[in-house]
Image (cartoon, rainbow, N blue to C red; front, top):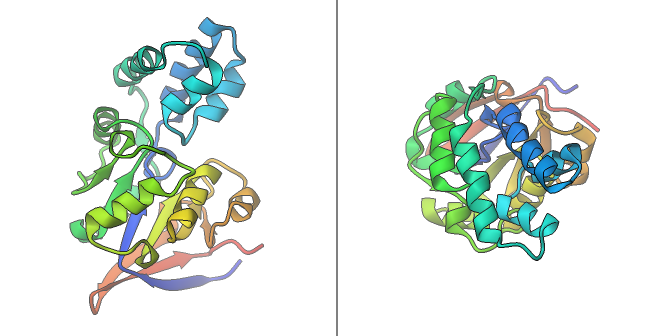
Length: 225
């Protein structure tokens, strides 16, 4: 392990589920029930659904269905089930330490669901939410993080993305950003193989300070490979 590392950036772009909040129990309940109803393997569907737009998963498993109808049903269930959603270690403290114009949340769920989960997890309200409603192609494509950077008026190359799954890491890298991956959902080695520049345990390993107009991000004990 390294002791600490400091990097400079203009803004932080956060994924939400698995980065800022733990919504996995609620997400898995919804997708497992949906999978069982349609005769699919609940474990497989729950794993594939994580970190991607729900519509992508629906299209993969039900190519001939009414995708919009199925997706609305998934969202209805997710909005109704926020039990147990909680902030992940260090998330609230890190967000509160950042100037509001220097961070955004970039998530694969819709805006109503993103707001419901953020409220359930007690997160500060971001000035900028980028959701599935704002992009045509979700993660692992670059559009979500490109859109977020543009919304902040900052080049993606001047941003650092904070992610927890390989699709999100790939999205951030494709957008031209550097990526800090959190080992909250996947094996750290898999995150590095996906292209993460650094891997740390969770948001509690990150500190931020605004110095001379730039964010100084301290990574405590980044994982070496």
